[in-house]
Image (cartoon, rainbow, N blue to C red; front, side):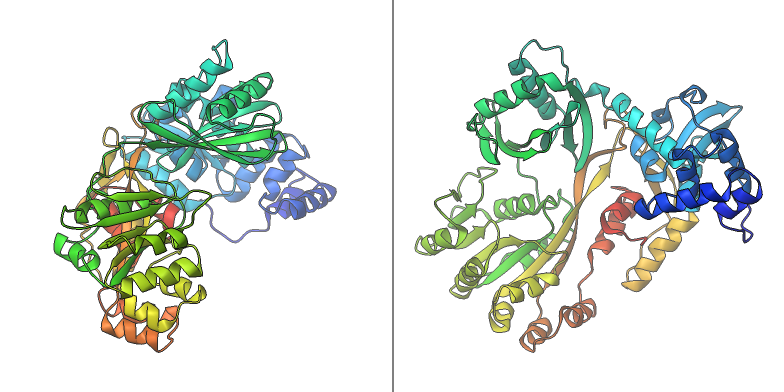
Amino acid sequence: MDTRKRQPIGVELVKRGIVNQRDIENALHYQREHPDKKIGDILYLINATDPNELIGAIGEIIGERGILLTNDKIKLKLTDYFSLDVAQKNKAIPFEVVSGKIKVCFANTVDTRSMNTIKLLLLNKGLVMETYITFESEIDRVLRSMEGEVTTDFEVSENNDTAIGLVDSIIKTGIKRRASDIHIEPMATELRIRYRIDGELFTAAKIKKEKQQQIIGRLKAISNMHQEKQESQDGRILVYEDYNIRVSSQPNVYGEKFVLRLLKKNSNIKNIFDLGFPGTEEELKQSIQKKNSITIIAAPTGEGKTTTLYSIMDYLNRPEINITTIEDPVEIRIPGLNQIEIDNRSSFSGSLRTVLRQDPDIILVGEIRDTETGEIAIQAGQTGHYVLSTIHTIDSVEVITRLRKMGLSDYDISSTLATAISQRLVRRLCPKCKQERPFNEQERKRITTIGEKYNVKFDLAGTTYDAIGCKYCNNTGYYERIGIFEVLNLTDEIKEAIMAGKSSLEIRKLALQQNYKPLVVDGVRKVVNGYTTLEELNRKLLINS
């Protein structure tokens, strides 16, 4: 690629006579309203000149071969070479193989990192990559059209004579495909069905608009919602064996959108270490087997906090211990526990007051949402109980800041908070199609930099894996998820820093001097150990930003 300094694309195109100055002015006006669009793509979108000449000239200017990527030029199946997820992430489409060389089209904004990622992936398949560029809008168009191909195995079919059969097909397919949520979304001309699988949304089907009201009516009927109300509602579907399905409706401009959360009634609770918890059993005991204290799990919504809490409760559960939980809702029923479900007539704080009179040893509070619940939880910890709960923060150190903002005193926090655990969920590599290869130089450099920053030595002598994609993983390259964790055990020095009113930055600096390692360290360990990829870790933690 020619890396010499050059004039802006627009200037070069005017010099070559491909477009005129008026075209550039129109494109710049368009760009002010669409700042994410590049000049070359805008000139294509506003039909300023012949697209073949335009992309050819852009290619010459940036030192690549330009091609207008039409459907007739694509002579292979993308997912035979890498997953749709990889293609979307790198804006790359392979379109032809000739004599061991594979032609791959990228967006016209050349991204060297993306090109290197795809090049290495294809080299591991024994193919040499020939690079082409096209308009980003064409890349997006092709990838959108391929979403339907990749998800044809979802089996949602309109070939049901009734709304009853269609809704049943949507839900049963979601259960079969391990979906955590089903999105049923009215659009301008259709009803879109999407499944969230391993944290990612996939389009499963697009249903004719005329069936929308029948489907909505059926959903309201089986979830015990008011048919006539055109406003937000909550309900439950209990007609599917082993599943408690929570339903939420929300009107939008095209109708009522429904989200179904699929909760398995008797799902097996995973061992805490199977979830990905780092360290030894002895280290785990130091973090969670305590009295007169609180342990808080911290993460954004949808990152597995509740699952981790259940695993810890299952680990601690013994006949000689009285464990009571206060949840909204009770997602898994655990034998031997006293589980209380919050409803519209109760609250965490009110239920917690009552539980304190029930002689508990361990109390699980689903979430500390407000000052009152926080104060009572602190009080419970100070009076001989062990309390576990969750909170929404970006990492474990920020738990201290969040509790402070709730109005809890530094004394109460330092005297009662024992451990803060933060976590994220990353997708596991699919065991059926993951492809082994050595770490490339860029990956080694990035991992080494992280290791040096946090004084951790990573073994890069082994191999890593690429996410390829197959039928088993729905062509994503990933199957199920694993947690990455950071654990902040409050030492005497950290407690003193809290008492002294030190900021979270000062507390983090002190913790790093002790045994605290941030999320990225455990994430890189899971890359090195072959559980996930550096790309997936970066998607979750933005380690390359």
